[in-house]
Length: 327
Image (cartoon, rainbow, N blue to C red; front, side):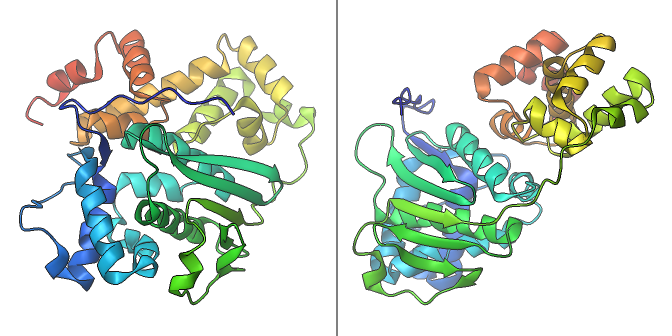
């Protein structure tokens, strides 16, 4: 696999982490061992503050790992319930299956983290092998590894409630089996923490619909509206033409042909839906542009800014100054 380009540092030159995840670590420590929280932590706002210095997250996780053990760090994951109303969590939980959720996570890491990534391989249906690594510098370390695995596990438990199994590699050393969390010991983590194996059945998509079913759509305009509504249900998903065709119960070839008859294309509609979703969030929320770009499905901040300006005639920040200057 080709090496990824190095990500940029944050504006002040520090490597960064997702503020939402840093707040999650802090909340878990506050509940279990508040004495481990530094006095100068400050109040993290995971909605208005998209990024936090990586050093804060590293210090909190290392302190939790050393004082409370690897099992505690892994079990931070289920604490995501405290962010039930957070749009980031909603975006993950809107995933129809674990495969889509993992793809969203990989894109989230490009937005929300300066150094750490999760490499995902899918050698056979229902089997995923992941590796947590750094794009430059030292490896993330056991505390970071187990924290990320714990978050992914907790999310997958919500999306794939039946049949989920999670193991550390080499081994395997199971942490979950068939949807049930297993008791862990210190020895469970001694052979390494950066490589993981996940198994889950996924959701059956059913048989592909016949092309004739597409003809039941109420003309080209009706099809466009159906497509827009389906994409808007989950704008953070990296939709492909084949995936959305299956979701609509049509073939990809017929969908493409009928969109052409309507004078548009799949790419144009995806861009329009994402920009429209971004406009609504910019106008009605105080979320950062980083989070809005992720939630609306853009690959990265550069694509968000480029597509938004091309469609609206202004940058996302300029648009906010017009529609919501007080924010």
